[in-house]
Length: 127
Image (cartoon, rainbow, N blue to C red; front, side):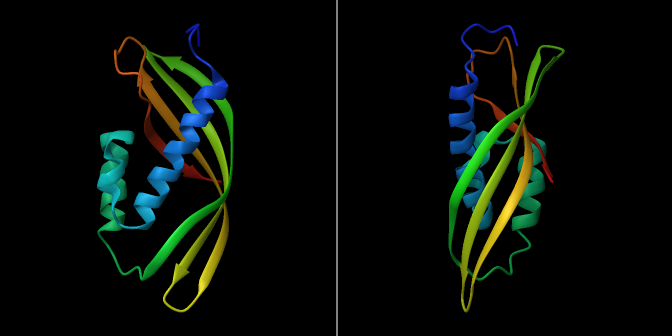
């Protein structure tokens, strides 16, 4: 990307913060809390999944989180950044605790000429 104000380190710091907010909101069936961080397509998909319910989750915590940029591209004035997230996620249910090590690839995007400095999550894949 040719944006002189762009800092990969700063971007990853914000991406990690967004990851925690989005995943926690999703796990706690409250995806509306993260709506401004999601593209409409991702929001609709997450909302559809969380509305299925049936989750007796008492608490959720991301205990470890690493992030690295794997691809940056610009397509028709839209900047896209793919980030590999490696996380340990601990869930406390009614009768058990579960810890999962998860690898996700998230694609964030934003319109380059927009006055809005925020990136939104546009795609999620699990490795």
